[in-house]
Amino acid sequence: MADGITGVVHLDPQAGEKVRGAAAGLGTDNSLDEIKRPELMEARRTGDIALVHSWELVTSVDGPGTRMTMFMSGCPLRCQYCHNPDTMEMKVGTLERIEDVVKRIKRYKPIFKASGGGLTISGGEPLFQIAFTRRVLKEVHDAGIHTTIDTSGFLGSRLRDEDLENIDLVLLDVKSGDEETYKLVTRRELQPTIDFGDRLSAMGKPVWIRFVVVPGLTDSPENVRNVAEIVGRWSNNVERIEVLPFHNMGADKWHELGYPYTLEDTKPPKPEDIEAIRDVFRAKGFTVY
Ligand code: SF4
Image (tube, rainbow, N blue to C red):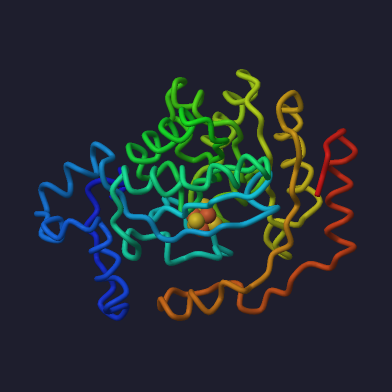
């Protein structure tokens, strides 16, 4: 399933009508309910159809202005603190057709215009179902709407240079500053994120960095210094850094899914500790929130 195409879509039977209704949300054309598996796989390969976890209309997060955030299903990482563990596997969501999604987003254009906002594709990992994400970005960007992706960067190499032209802002998570801690936090490697960040820096693409402070996991002075070192390489294009305190509001979802939640006893960091970490980034000349 690593390619985000060939995974089997298990619609959670417990979600009952909701998910069935969602799958029917392929459109008002009822014949689509009977789409055959090979057709579905082909449609996902071409990006005609994708599994979308959920939507949100938000202000002041996920980019400038009022954002329509589309959360995609599927993620190759397994972050211990993930707030949306139900997006990790391609299990839950709505099968959506690209034309419906693009139409829905374009309807909000006046709101985006008035607020300086736009579309944010998040997840899960927006680059997991790359064919669909690529096409949505192009169509929405061509319509004059500001576009953002919210990514770990692990799959950044899936974006071609011409795809990046359709992205106005990248929200890039740097989850740790060294390979060992990164692997502990995410079960994956750090290097692809650094490579992606280097590429974005070389092309001068606007980036907001996010770093989640988890006591006992990512908050050691050494790790913070290492994250600051990495981000320091990108001072030409990083517009802001968001240092976000861990909270365990995602715990219930882990329990519901029956996944082992490792941060049960971890408390949120103290505000003064967060400020001290922000100061490390400020000392490098960054705007930090
Ligand atoms: S990258 Fe995001 S969606 Fe994926 S596991 Fe980590 S926190 Fe969850």
